[in-house]
Each structure stands twice: as structure tokens, then as C-alpha cells.
Length: 406
Image 1 (cartoon, rainbow, N blue to C red):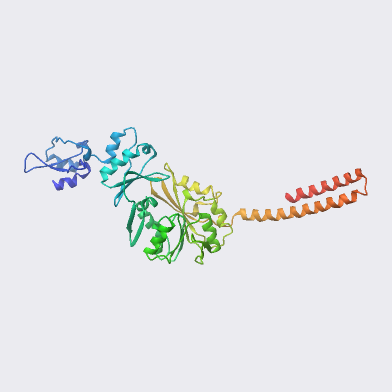
Image 2: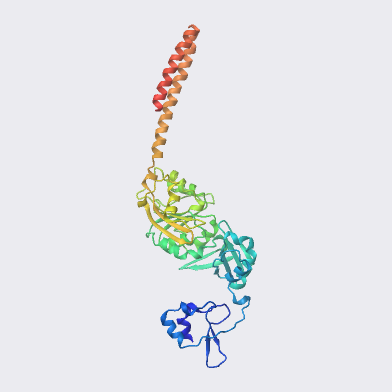
């Protein structure tokens, strides 16, 4: 029976609480339970030959709530909704990325998942937020990742453990000794992995205290510099080599340029990079690893267009180093910072504008002085002659101004 169970693995009943091998009415025989929709026609020739030497019988089973998986229960209770996504577990917590259509029924879904997972608490995760949808208890965790330990509240980083492989992929792109700036530092999953590889990391996070504690616990506080700033202020501070910590102290950051910049597009306006990197004379310029998500699937070209627009289409195809589908509707673009962004025309135009403004200002000062002189002279001049002279000179000056502006 065990041999047949392995060979027919794709066609078994596989119901919770029901073993696939059951006792027959005859003690020396065993029943291999196949799925309810099994059909001989679905077997290949080899399996058909093996099945022909056995007897196919009908076997009646009584299914209860305990024998159905969460997705099956929810589909029967809410038949108008699409299939329920897979849920995950982490220690005493079950969690699920819940589509919009399920949120009005979150308590029902949460209770079903709690029953099936046998976890004490269930968390529903949406695009904007996360919340407990069933059970009660502490959400505090201590998790292990490689040689690291991290302590945090689950709601601070609800999906972090799903992205272990992605972190390994990204960290593999960091050279030993690199300076990495993580604008979405969270509780430290990526920052600590990069520091473990002997990178220096500047991590920006709203979870400042938690990340600081994790760097100390893993004895990596000499390589991870933690900040809680607006991302644009952090990047401008890096340019000037000084940043202000949450305690109010000014600290000098490593005297080297950023090699890798990690960005979450949902929390950072990419257009701000035009201002930050304009006129920057780093060589080479940093590689940007930009995470983007969407509610519907997008093609490689559609995702790339999302970064081209805020950068005024300065990104060329040759600047795209990697396009990676992290998970459904979640992407990572690795982009070599375009030289055109750092030496953008906006800087040249701004300089030209400053010169033009200064010339116009000087010309206006001349006009004001001319008006003062003209008024003084008008005391000794007939009114009609004064107006005529003034109109003539102003017309001449307007023509000169128009020529300068052109």
C-alpha cells in the first residue's frame, strides 16, 4: 500500500484528519483512498497497467468540518467570493494577505483559519494595514534568520519572514565592504543580513528603537547606523556627510559614497531623487534597488515605465540591471543610477535662469534710476516734451529686455 501511495500521490484523497490508507473489511487488505473526482483516463499508461492488477471499489466516508481545509470551508460559506489565498504560520501566529473582497467577512475568515491552523491568533494583512482578525494574545516574537536573532512585534513587519529568499538574493548583489542605504529598514531583517556580510549600512526606519535593539543584540551596531528621518532628509544628510539622530545628536556618517540604495516606491516619491542626486559627482553612481507593488499583474515594461516617468524618462534600457518578480504583483527593479539624473539639464537651466534673473534685476535698477532722473529733469521741461522723451526711452528699454530674454 505504501508503494502505491507514493506512485499515485497526485490522485489521493488528501483530506485533513483522514489517512490516505484505510483498513478494508478483510484484515489482510488495505484501501488506498483516491480523490473524489478521480478518473482512470487521467492516468498514464504505466499507472493504468499497475491499477489493472488491483480492484477499484467504492468506499463511503462521512466528512465533518474537521475534514475540510480552510479554503474549502470559506468557499462553501462564501460561494460568491474567489478562492481564499494561502495562509502562513509563524510560531503562535497565523497570517494571511486578505484580498479586498474578504475584509467585510474578516471575522468569519479569521475564525476558520484559527480553527484549521490551531494557532492562538490570526492576523489579516491588507495593502494599507494589518490587524488581528481572530484570537488574542501577544504578538511579540523572537525569530532566527541565518545567524541572526530579531525581536519585534509581528505587526511591525508582518510579511518579513516570507521574503527570506529575496533578502538572500539582494544581499548577494552587495560587495563586501559596500555602503548600503536602506530607506525601508523596518526592524532590521535586511540591514542586519547586509552588515553580517561586512557591509556598512545606513538604515532609515519608523521602528527606530526596535532596530537599534536588534543591532545591539547581534553585536552589529558598529556597522549599522540607524535613523528615523524623512527619506529625502536622510539622503540630503548623506550628501553633506552629517545626519541628526532621533536623540538630537549630530553624527558623522562614513566618508564614502553609497554603493546600493534600497527603496520602497510606496513610501518614497522617486521624483525626489532628481533633486537629491542632481550635480552629484560620485563615481560610480549608486545602484538603486526599487521595490514596487501593484493590485494587478504588470509586465516588465509597465513596471519600468513607473520609474521612467518621475525621472523625466532619463532611464535607458541599458540602465536596467535586473527585473525580478518577488511574489505575485510585487517586483524589484535594480537600476544603475542614470548619469543624466546626476548631471541633469535642470541644473544647467537653473544656472541660466539665475544669470537671466540677475541681468533683469540690474536692468530694472537702471530703469528706476532713469525714472528718478527723468522726474527731476521734468521740472525744467514742458510736459508734452517730457512724456514724449519718456515714452521713447521706455520703448527702447523694453525692446532691449525682450532681446535679453530671448
